[in-house]
Amino acid sequence: VAAKLTSVNGQAVGGRRRMNINGDFRVMQRGTQSGVTSSKYCIDRFKFSVSNCGTWTMSQDTDVPTGKGFTTSYKIACSSADASPAAADYVDTRYLFEGKDIQHLKFGTSDAESITVSFWVKCKKTGTFNLNLNTYTGSGTRCTSKVITISSADTWEEKSVTFPGDTSAVIPDDRTKGLGLIFWLDAGSDYKSGTSPTSGWEALTAANRAADTTIALADNTNNYMNITGLQIEVGSFKTAYEFWSYREE
Image (cartoon, rainbow, N blue to C red; front, top):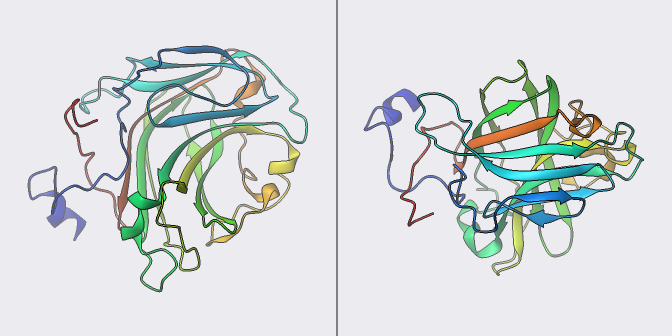
């Protein structure tokens, strides 16, 4: 089925597919952010969150996978290391959807849609990190997770995972955050002492959120991660990255 659909024209299949904005990181209205030690936005739509876990620089980079149509990537670089994070320390980057933009996912019903997330990543270190998908219901947060493996250092790799729909999370139809995709980059034991919720959804448990994150990007000032081509779409298989015009982004 996937082969037939993607062969229609190599791009759009039945209309707009990519749910997220600025997945190729071309839009950066705030400029490079350096010396960052607290939560901050840099590239449009992406939030960087850190608590007592090193000092960071976020920037728009021209390092991209060859021949894929991308011209920019989102670079996160450690500028002051923390080799031994305390229990409550963490660092991540995340994309948040407002509730009004995701009602078509039908979360909170038996018809809840699966979500496929694909992206290119380049990292200084090999290892694993947790990619969490969170739902924010107004009465509590729920979480599921996938474990992403960095197989080769300093090398662009394409990743794709599918999350099941959350049949229990009723996301408010308003402008507050309703869904979040979180890339874990490092964390202390408060976030790593449990078991990753990779088999389905659960009420948010702090100890489980980064349980399989081993890359520890805060431990050296040579560490970095670049991301581009992030596509979040409805369904259980990956389609080609959907490029929009700069004006649309």
